[in-house]
Image (cartoon, each protein chain N blue to C red):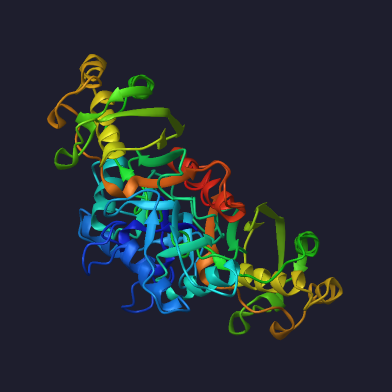
Length: 260
Length: 260
């Protein structure tokens, strides 16, 4: 199924005992609906951290449900907190795996560089008032595209032995003081997009140079990259499969103009 | 000054004893800043009801403040709750009056007609799942343009003896199941935009006919129009003056892509 959630309501996607997590909320609601009374487990395409939002998360699960996918969507949404919305539930083949079948994932990060507070958007943007050299910001995004060792852009405790990843697309859109940074890759390391944005802030304000980055991209320590940007600006935006199992009409209407 | 606020936090714009209202919050914060310690009174361009949002409200006031408008904006925002944002403070001539100098006001109303819940936008849209005939909805908006007696589109207790008003523009934008209705007029009656939207819902679902409306527009009772649509979808969007006292850069960045 394709779903969205407000990261403010959760301690991240992944189950953590009894803390409110997206996984726990989904599994509790789905288990209530299983006709054989079994516990339903879900597998998500991306494990978002605490406070991170999703507009296009995908999860798969097995359930006994005789009434069809539209009725399941409706029943499920009725059993979930208002911080989770279910766009679509579709039946898939047993071979489909939300994480492993994904071709790529796209994250979006919103930054507000204005002087004034935004009461309606404050939960969804990083309010960063430092003056940015947009040319440097764009050069940085161009540099990170491609296949690199992103070990320095990973939470230290989670760094894998092979931290090489491919960034397929990275770009920035501007509307005056409102920025949207988009990063697309097959898979990401823990906190990778937030550390990319935090490093971009240091580049764009001259605290780090592009030369520092070119060294970092062939390996480096976490301390050499910038800080982890706040969770509130980050959205798991899209997960792509081939073929796409969803129609996406409602998803497209929401993401097509969301903030910027 | 030009400001925005989240209507959820307030019992409307206008002061009501000690209830949290936008007027009270602004007057308390400004009075703290007045160098002569005087109580500052504000006058708003539009009195939004309880729960109604503003992205472009304008208020004027007199204050003793020696440090210039940019410093006043900053000091004021620091003294206000996070549900109010101040885009710009500009000095104006004594002849300027936020309400009386306004040429027109524009309201926007957002409707979500999708099946699924929108966790990030639920405070800002009316979730109305009834099937709409968009052609009827558009014809209705065309009919209300111009100079009519809108007495039936006013909260009963507030109906003035002369309820004739001019609607300069009325239109609807669609992006799949997301709708934005915009209504522009010199001035509005109490609840007028919400009753227009509530009546539009009855027209677009066939519960009222366009003939009913043409009769209503030359006067009618409140009961003959549709119900008052919920406050959460409504935004005071723009107030226009000639000349405009504001630069509007941040305002334009926010309103240019807000929801739709």
